[in-house]
Length: 235
Ligand SMILES: NC(=O)c1ccc[n+]([C@@H]2O[C@H](COP(=O)([O-])OP(=O)(O)OC[C@H]3O[C@@H](n4cnc5c(N)ncnc54)[C@H](OP(=O)(O)O)[C@@H]3O)[C@@H](O)[C@H]2O)c1
Image 1 (cartoon, protein in one colour):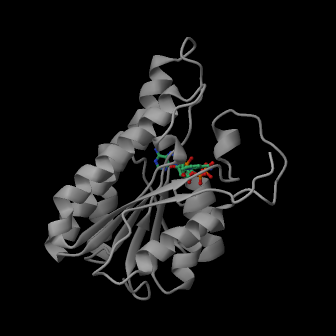
Image 2: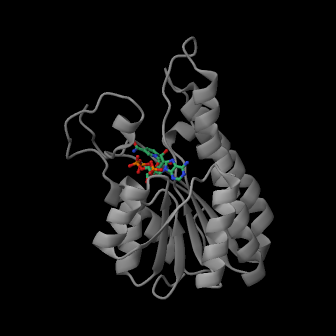
């Protein structure tokens, strides 16, 4: 697709991978809308980069419906959604908390579905569109403490395959991107010990570049899935 002149929604665009993607898309001439739950973070990004922001919790259906109503009213169309909003909950099985387990599913799985559902309605009408789901290498493997997070990303991968099967006939590309560890606020936000910056490990711009590469492919072709590792993370 041609990014210049397009309208693109980036959920969870107020920090990390989403923010870097929104900045790059905006620099390439797209009208970008970012979402997040924290109004202050959104306002500061809007002021700094001139990107439109909308406070919306992906896991709240009323927020998602309001968001799409605003997009319809302001733009009347949408070319791509980067389904990126998400966070980690890492805990051993025996210490897993039911409400925290359900909350992370509500954002990473239900939220991704609600956003994709509303976007797909527009895309089917237009007979074109792109859904880029940001999963993880955890969508393919379990690990200690990964019960909740891995399960959400396995589920996102499963939904990606279902949506691809349903939507391809409307010229809609549904792409899965699986980053390995990326140095963002994701680690401290999920309560894990932050480690010193390692220049050999992935950063947000590596994933933003991957997303843009998938989007910029001509519409007749699409990459179904991309997994991104650090070449030599050295630990
Ligand atoms: N960093 C990694 O190592 C890594 C690796 C693989 C995959 N990923 C995936 O990449 C995506 C982005 O993560 P990141 O590393 O960029 O983390 P981040 O810097 O913590 O950014 C997460 C973004 O999502 C937003 N968000 C979280 N829950 C939300 C909700 N319910 N509704 C709307 N927005 C929400 C956050 O804003 P608010 O808190 O204000 O809502 C923030 O803008 C996530 O899906 C994550 O699972 C990350």
